[in-house]
Length: 97
Image (tube, rainbow, N blue to C red; front, side, top):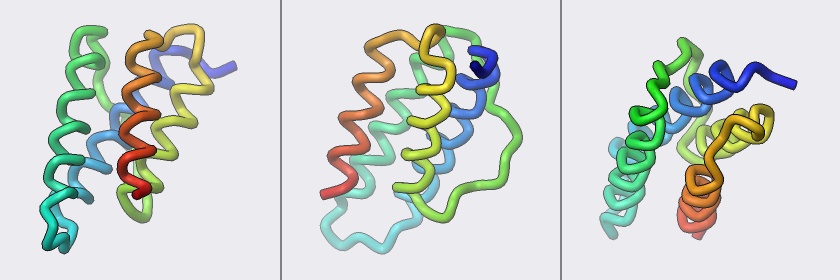
């Protein structure tokens, strides 16, 4: 089992990387801007928990970053608020469309 605070720090880093990837995406529909905003909204959970992002290399793209964030939260699941988990999974599902 992974230390809960480290799992949250890793997840936050990947979430921020996903937001950056969405913001820089070439998306004429503008959907990626909404997804980036949702990533930023999710950061509020981490701020409330006092989490500082871990220093990691970014994933290949936004989807990979969200998958990595999800895996990190799964590894520290006993420390992760259920609402945070649910919102991240919802964001992953929307970004896959």
